[in-house]
Length: 586
Ligand SMILES: [Ca+2]
Image (spheres, protein in one colour):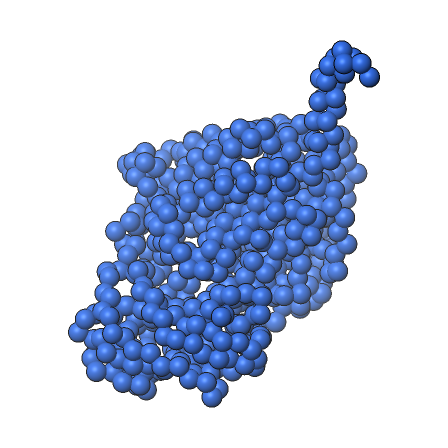
């Protein structure tokens, strides 16, 4: 080829390379999940109390799912979006004390994308199991930063973990998680990535920087809950201020994707994990977080993929968190043959086809001992009352008597689902907490997962981020039912507080014949934290800055048993306040 011809061809060559690059590069995925944010907590959904321009833009430039269903509470929704299956199949029956753990024989969406060559990361509230192999690093996420519990007591530079290691967060927690997300996007801009951002707001405690709160602290709210006397206005204000902070962070993510030129190669999804955590405006729907009615399980859901999925469309067909895994693998063209039956289906036809061939379907909602079922037009609630959501979106009038056949069909479908799907859940099963997995260095053993005996009390009725206090005597103890997965030597670090007047206690950790003793020598007595930042009085634990104390090394052998912490001498009025133990494989 002569030189002139070659120079003339350069633009064409470059163009063809860039086209090839785009079509051959699988799409990145950014999955943003808010926590306890209602469908109504966004301006795009008609709430004039709030302004969420970034999320609204995401919705407008992408596709809106009008009736998208998640579960009534946190852990189940996370399990469903991770697996494409109803959470009861994956063993999730609670939000704490191990009941939030997703069964180990479940395959997660991160496993699937990681196996397809994606870089994977999760930054935020995990809430599907803490100790490996339940930990996110063992469920397909290469990088994890956040907290594995369901609730955190303080949102300002709190104790968090990075791939199992205890670290201190930097600044307001959502800004911090977003910062990690931005760095991950930047670092992986040339390779396909899967980024999961399970934010933990506007879940309580109600805390948000003044920049957001100042607009709300005395704001008149024009839109109110349908039973306004039930509404706590200050709670609503704080939830909306927290939602505006989320919106700002979503804006930062969208901007980063655009700035790096990735918008045509990135699928961005936004949804919440359950209904609102208080009575506030929510489109006149019945129920809030915890309910299997429309208001408890309907979530905002927006999906955008610039250049591939035409935006500006609202999809009326019902869909849910169970559909995310099949939809995203389908869109990314990943061949995945699930070992276990998926409950979700790919929504790709609804997203891409002009007139999709779409079958009528049922979506089930379950929590506690309540089950409701939704088809395109009706919801049969947990008491088998039937509501026509087209005429009566607020579920005010039971129409089962005038629609006997529909009520019968849905009741039968519910009985069948409970028999065939719900029966997979065993709530009596007490799985021990796993420690000592040979592939993982850090084993966190928090107060949350322990049982207190004698005088010892939990700092709060909700275990999530609680600590043990009132440890008075040598007859008191804390035990954990654990299963050591592989033999090994472990360095033991206890996170404690103790006032100067009470230092000097000795204590012993035992497991079978193995024992390790420690002594509290240094006082460490910081104040309780959290209350000073709370916009609303809380019902969950306050926290403290606990001090790590390295006790030494213990050898553990593979078996199941009781890990026991006891004091051997108590010279003062108490041993210590205890937050967690870290076992580090050496
Ligand atoms: Ca939640």
